[in-house]
Amino acid sequence: MLAIAHSATLVGVEALPVRIEVDASRGVPVFELVGLAEATVRESRVRVKSALSQLGVELSDTHITVSLAPADLRKAGSGFDLGIAAAAMAAVGAAPAEALQDVLFLGELSLAGRVHAIRGVLPHLVSAKARGVKRAVVPRANEAEARLVTGMDCRTCDTLEELLSFLRGEVELPRPAQVASNGASAETLPLLEDLADVRGQEGAKRALEIAAAGGHNVLFIGPPGAGKTMLARRLPGILPELSHEEALEVMALHSVAGLLPRSHAFSTQRPFRAPHHTISDVALVGGGDTPRPGEVSLAHRGVLFLDELGEYKRSALESLRQPLEDGVVTVSRAQAKATFRARAMVVAATNPCPCGHLGRSTVPCRCSRERIAAYRARLSGPLLDRLDLQIVLAPVEVSALHGDYTGDSSGDIRARVVAARALQRERAGRAQEHLNASLVPRDLHRVCKLSTECRDLLARAATALGLSARAYTKVLRVARTIADLEQSPALSPAHVAEAISYRALDRERTEVRPAA
Image (cartoon, rainbow, N blue to C red; front, side):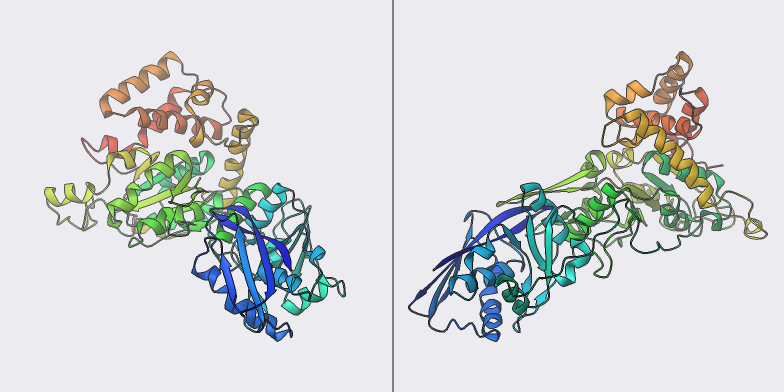
């Protein structure tokens, strides 16, 4: 008898439908599986046979043929086990074949018949809903992800025995409880570190506020102990929470990577990723035989912190150039092409020289000009061009560490950031990417009307600093953000001058000066 069930395979964050056809006939007891399946899928034969035997469904005298269609689509992952088992039970008459119609089955089986969690349930269900699928059965361990998708009759099961009883109409599988539609977090968000903890470095804090308001990338250059890491780790605390749609984008990427917590899935907290400088190219931007998102995608809508930037492999850093510009990573393989979103704010930190003491008055630098030049040559010009704000930090004076801090807290700064972003969203209209850092040239010139004085100032700076065309537009975007923080509809020379002051490495051709 022939039975058909439905499942899917992930290509990036998109789930492509797979039809599972199972034919059971008398003959040599063989379990065949065809359909361009990788090793994990082929091994499902062992898991499914053992799980079925625990239910008393014996296949010892049955010839089982499983076809995963379309045959030219590569199948990966262990999520096909539940669909294969359901179709096999229908093929041998243990369950009614009509109960499998228009149902998406996802789940991995143990030898004892338990249904284990799999990666990517959230993007699976989102894609299935877009295809018009109305019903699904997923592991109970993935209930937190399943409850995020509305408009589907989604059920959860813990064992294959439960599924068999459900298919026979003997019991009802439970539905996951739905979350509130307003996007509220399922749990209280953790208390973020406050920017008020950082003493001194007022110029760097101002730059961080501008970066948060416009979604700009930042480079901090300074000696050890200047506060580069403290500043970077407090950036999420001044960013607005994710909207419901943005949170689903982020969680889909984390679900594909298998990093979504099982206990609770929904969170409006922006991600913060800080990979070690020994990271490989693939781990940073994504890839692999079965493409998975890298750190730049896992930081989507959040912060990617690259500490000790000069210690990263040059090839890894160069691979970031395209994602920083386009906001997506495309991984091409012979069988498929996967696209991951990667609209992350990059905050990088580096020492001014190998010993780290260049520019300090108390500790002399021991590096020669040649060593300093070689150290900085690790960072290419095109990469540095993509870092909108380049800030040189001075060592913190000991006197600044004593006494009460009277400056703005992260909450105060976040309020200004939210107001500036609201202005950008209103100005962008229906455009999905509304932050100034993502403005396309046509929109940039529309929102950055320059007076004669501003145009002359920019022209002089471009000539004196040797700004590239990309750096020139970066200055415009940063100037627009500075104006938005002041709720100013027009750019002034003061806005442009401040934006120019954040191009530290362009000024460095003559002399490096710390930020005020």
